[in-house]
Image (tube, rainbow, N blue to C red; front, side, top):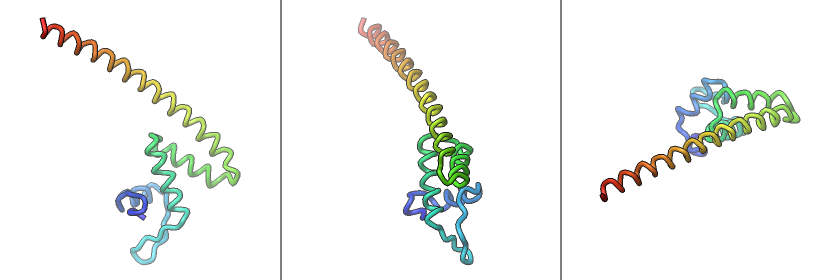
Length: 114
């Protein structure tokens, strides 16, 4: 599974220790079900999008608790909006910093030239 998902075995054990996946065991070998693979894909996507482990755990718990997935979708939409707002604030701050740095660079180059 680690190769299929592009993660290390240590990463899989980490999420297992956190209770987010629960592979079966045959001796010391872990056997991952389709459910485990799907959960890992959701976990990795959530991490890539910047969600916390707590957020991801909540999404997974809601998924298991609500067969229609209405509450999960509601929580997901709310968290997505929060993440979008946070990223837009970061984008604005980066744009402002870049503009300021470009201004300082231009002033420095102007002083060097004169």
